[in-house]
Image (tube, rainbow, N blue to C red):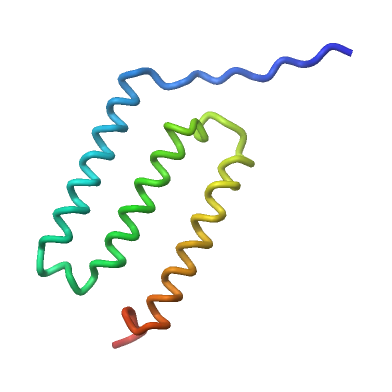
Length: 102
């Protein structure tokens, strides 16, 4: 029985990868900038966690080609990200870094 060929997806061009790299550089500069702004120190951990999660999603989507692959692989990488996010916020509440309602 002959094998059925896998469906081919259009992969991003070099220009797309350069744009994604520029976005990642900007996000990294924002992360460093947030650390040095005293007004953000009260919310430093959540801001850095969100920025890191955004960078993770961008890297996984483009450089690991999950945007063009089967949705199952997105679940394999996205599920643990959601679990880790929940655990981190749970620990932030547990140790009193974050509180509900003041």
